[in-house]
Image (cartoon, rainbow, N blue to C red; front, side):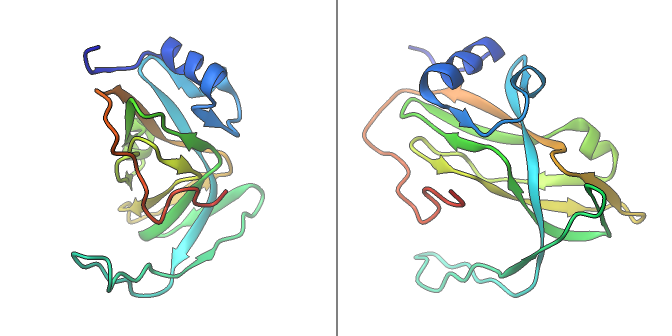
Amino acid sequence: MESCVLTGNEIRELISKNNLIQNYIDLDTQITPNGFDMTVKEIHFITSEGAVDFSNQKRILSETKKIDYVNDCISLKKGSYKIVYNEIVNIPPNIVALGRPRSTLLRCGANVGTAVWDRGYSGRSESLLLVDNEKGIKIFKDARVLQLVFIRTATDDSLYKGIFLKENI
């Protein structure tokens, strides 16, 4: 089968039959013509330095502190934050996913940085939220900030086995 971007109907079917995505809020709202909108569960301050190297032997993940919602809203100043999503994603062996910020977020002066959702990954993902707007941004609980786009791939035996497998679940 050729590689291709999955349609909303194909995503809906994989959710129904294979638990592609769990813990979603409203399937009809979150499924898009070519993706799935991910929603914010938590936002964290980044509170410490991290470290990245080639072998991961010196890797240090930055520590974070959860920000409390006030009236279901968090007002953020310009800076870097971590998002934890509501949804649990279960990527099958023949699919990979890429995350792209929703255009509304970009138009408000913020962006989401993501990595690849590899074949075999399962977890409640985290992403980087960058607020570039000098005036800040308000993020409401369950805000849709990221669209996951799913791409069908050829299969082989290499599946994700990294430290983030089953994260936050």
